[in-house]
Length: 182
Length: 323
Image 1 (cartoon, rainbow over the protein chains, first blue to last red):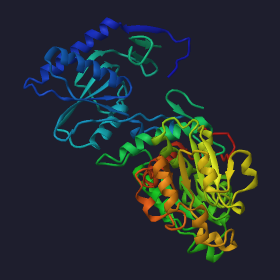
Image 2: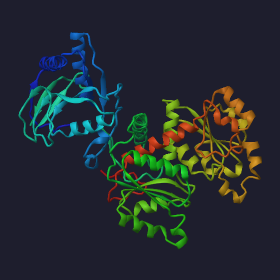
Image 3: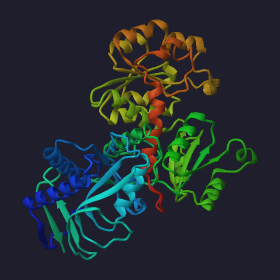
Image 4: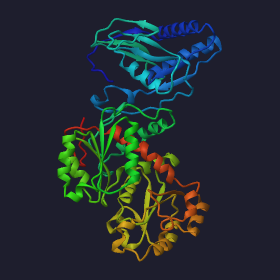
């Protein structure tokens, strides 16, 4: 995912702003669980898992109630495997709880075309039939190619197809922030 | 070429020699999540949906073809069995005729087993489909080697310096050839034990050879890998009799109890000739990896199918890969 050096990079969110957005997402999910039944969290590798973990940590601190956490590698469910220059290295998909009849919140760091979420939904449904699946996103950058919409959004920005939104977390990267490259 | 996120696919998997250590490590690493899949209620992923896999077996092999079939099914590919041995060969259809048929059928992957060395390479050269060698003559059996390496890594996450003793008909064994190569590429030490007539001379350049169990045990192996005696290829009488083979090179009751005392791991590519390579009671040995090898065969073959990419380029066994 390296970008040519001549691209200009504009910071959209700083580290502390990311924390604020994570808190917003967490609060919205707490409010949605008025009955105290916390939904199960499933993050899409790599940074969707980190986002789910951060939101879960916030919720646990605030309510003392820790959501279940799972992670999903969607590589085998992609619709563009044939066109990739390299064969993706697989990570362990791990859903350590039964999703049958449960409420699940799916996490990804950026929502763009919607194809990753389509693949994630397909994979998740192979684990059972949840009562409900919702979608939580840190940055919604528009330009959908499929009819998929988020339920919880940290930040919505307008972008063009040729721009690139980069989310960086300390857990996975050397730096932290959300950047718009053009 | 590999990056953090992936590795360049190849068109064909013909032998172990032409794979880089990096590619082998990728395949072993990729097989692990495939094995996890077997615990799910839906054991299938859509990675090869709409693709066709043709099983082209000129030699009968129930186990290997079933393993490939399950692997392809779990990747959602459509599988066709092309029963060559029973029909076409009798009718005099040549391998090249069969290749034309394959091209016309627009199959994406071809799994080939043939009694003659080099047939999979020949097919790979003349078809756009990805060719997976499922055993050719005395040449290679790369997916067996991959599953053996995966199984070894399950008991030894670090294979460096681990000692593997391969016992049996080394000369007529494509398993010995491919498996010893992959073990050595992963840093293990490999030695062979077999009748003088069945250990190829040139191989001693890379591996120690022993003529007796006592000498081999003194080498202190961690793993004993028993080869299958190829009963069907024994017409040439490389050793006097099966009873004689068992006495001299087989895992007898006494040798098995020594193996147990030392806690050595036991491997065998199957199917086992009970009473020839191995005594009955050793089949229930707690450190026998034989059943694990079979299970791991599916996951490693899934990894191979997932990695290969059909294309127009034919690479034979050169290092060139298509992007």
